[in-house]
Amino acid sequence: MSALLLRPAGPDDMPALIDLFRRSVLLGAAEHYDVRQRQAWIAVAKDEEAFTVRLDDAATVMAERAGTPLGFASFGDERIDMLYVDPAHHRQGVARALIEAVELIALTSGIDRLSVDASDAAEPFFAALGYLRLRRNRVERAGVVLANTTMEKRLEAQSHAGDA
Image (tube, rainbow, N blue to C red):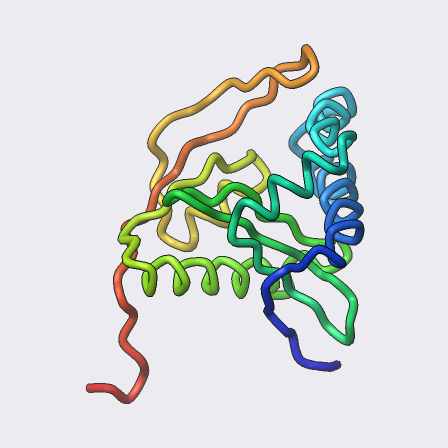
């Protein structure tokens, strides 16, 4: 298996990232959200131009292997906006690699905390990385109510093994 490559997402990546977003929500969140909720969630990507602008306005990092996009994360203003991984690559370290990259970029930019509105599917993942629950939210999308949880993590420079 080839190595996981993390890199900034560019304009040519947007169609693949939009497709990945849709598949991630429709398939990856099926255990936590019903069909109506998932359809409402992906409605934000119906306007592909606006979705592309949203990704372009944020710092968006993508993960790929052998040229195939496996996931992406976007953030800005001390907030993780999106984290999506291709359902075929869940639990393979892709999301962790993306969030570790986001946290490193944030730290080197002088940001000492990040927040995220984590879906019910993503909340355990973020909790395992040290994000703390702040509040439960109800969000309406296309007339359908979705729940998520605002979480936050204070960032600290990590010491490297052998640095002692």
